[in-house]
View 1 (cartoon, one colour):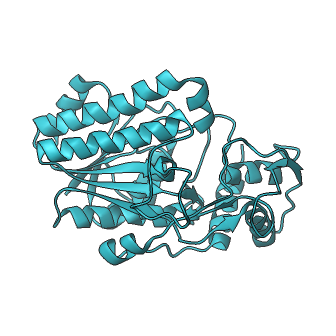
View 2: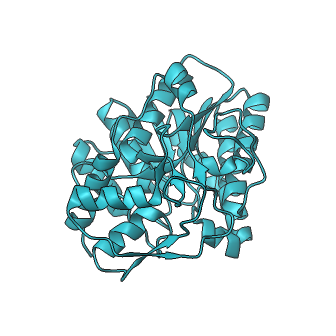
View 3: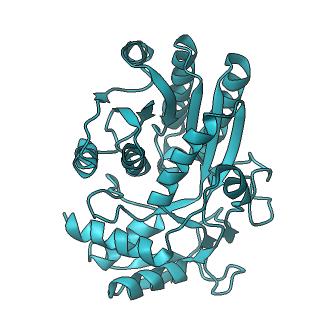
Length: 333
């Protein structure tokens, strides 16, 4: 089977491509490299020992997308392409709606035109409403998103559900929690082009001396150590989740949603401590004012993915910290 992957040069996309190649799938990739680098795909080719076509294009371009689907017989689509900065989505909401929703609509239309039936969508735990009990399961309340990025994921899920119902498309919507880590080779990993806002890249930049000190956003939350708790999942476990979703679509129809997380919460201070202990480094930190809208606790119920997909996360926080550090040391800029 040939899998068409949009946004494949990104953090999660590149790891997923490598996993699929290792499991015998063929791939074709589309990316406009606006927030990624072609180098990641070069490294995937080197690690896998396999070549695959890469198309430098905007997925919203229906003409080019139709031409691409004319050239290939795709058995499945994995849709990663999209802007992903929460902060930028607040300052430039129309940019996010135009890009993230436009690419989803164009892709569903072209899939319909070419009778391609299967799609896996890169969604997010940001689609869940703040007024939920933890852990979050797939039936927890959605909507009420706190930023345009989250709304684009929520709306894209609905677009794909409607396309599935109307166009006989089968879909798996994967709601990620907090991806961290890197490939154990140190050859591919997270490479933010802009100033990072996620915790792990900020920890790394502080440990490497690029940032003088790490700001911990609040320490008076209702948690054991007062800092926010999140569900951090290794990116290679996340990549394997996409492979299991492809296999699921081979025997199932309709649209289905799955959480991809570990089912365990880790606090900000616990993650910093794990990084320091695993890698033998110091991460200078200070407590600052909390960020408006941050939940005290957010983690996944993963029973559905375990029972239906046969998938569970296997990597530990320590492994994620070690792999992240190796990637950054080997690729120090």
